[in-house]
Length: 388
Image 1 (tube, rainbow, N blue to C red):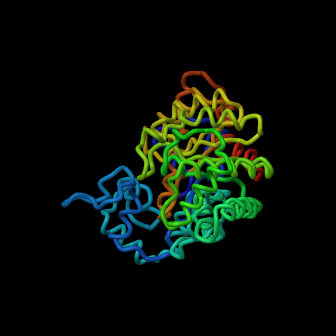
Image 2 (image 1 turned 90 degrees about the vertical axis):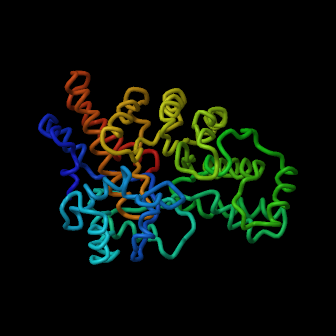
Image 3 (image 1 turned 135 degrees about the vertical axis):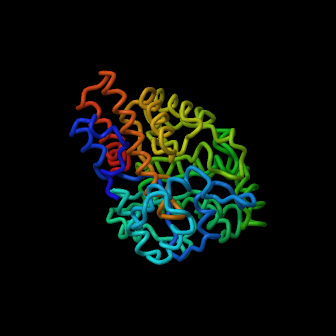
């Protein structure tokens, strides 16, 4: 399936040619992760298409979800199957083609010009950023995951003082090759943290405790705050955005603690430093994220919410009502399997097409306005913010 086949039924004829062209233009995927390179039997495939960390109830399957239905409807034709292919048929065809062919078909089908890949644990079963670009026929850049760098430092530092020094050096070295820094503090500890910079003494004491068991995930609030403020200094020096995972998606912290509104004080503290803040995956707190992006000049919001059907159009439509058009970015939220990258792009295009068609039908925007918004959200804002 080509990107032009991703527009909602009944809408393409109502869209001016310039708007259609803008919707089908290659996207910059500013939020994605590596996908699996290995053959996946059903027991390994299904957990990768759900946020759940457990098996489906007896007699059911993770294909009994919006994501599962979308895979059968939209991904099946890319594998030369009829739409709505049964799960067993889809997975058999996937195995027949092999992971290289499947990844190539799905990643190229997404119509992506550049992948900004969030680098976490370099697991051998995941495609590297370079491989994502090669399979997808796209440029690639790396996004540094802060907690992963901290984990590496904790396993090698010999003292609290060494921890501080090594973290500063490690972040600076990785940032020199990256386009942004990302934190998952929302999903490890929550965004309701004290925004003040911790004292050096408090950090050394907390680091010494951390070094006693460095393999555990980072949850200490003092060290998390120190990690963020260290990242702020690196981001300011390098001119990089600082990104935060928000909204649903984490399994460690309570969902309400991932509300981006909780970042307001910290975000305001970064404004005079000139460090852009990007709020990722904000749903269902997209209105709170929209408020921050609308009121703070350095805050941006992720418009690629990985929702399906009319849901994507509704949320994108709300963001268009609330957020300046130059503050919204597309991200597929893909990772694990290539289907997620493809569907992220498809649902975004379809949702934006519906939202633009509504404004054109209401005579609220001109065709030129709609086309400009589509270009800004799809690639223009990302190219400017990340200096691509």
